[in-house]
Image 1 (tube, rainbow, N blue to C red):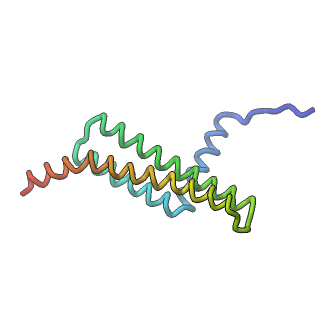
Image 2: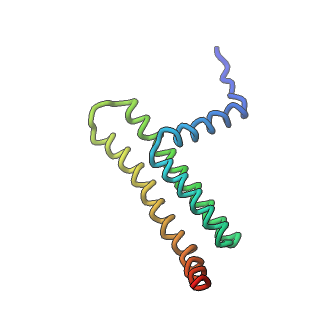
Image 3: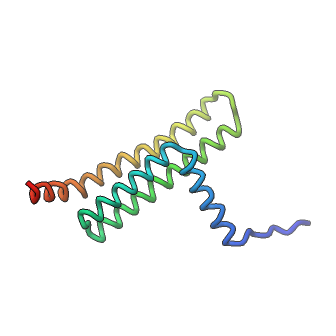
Length: 127
């Protein structure tokens, strides 16, 4: 009987980072999310947002990027299982994509709540 041996933890981390990198390399929307992370981080540094606001931003970054990775995984598994158009495959893909979209929209709304007052204050000080 074969013993089930667990993969060393360092190798598990390697697989996880490989998955993240694959998502960034192969998925257009993941590139867009990464650009948003960079731009929001730059804006946060520029405006000097509070520690609480940083925590909210990091939480939202994690949620959106994680959901995009899960969406990519769902799409890959569905494509692996069937090449035909099937109603359940469509539901799986569409709902996974919808979860990403919904979270990204909420992140934009929350980002506006955080950053618009800073932008108005900055514009007031410049003009």
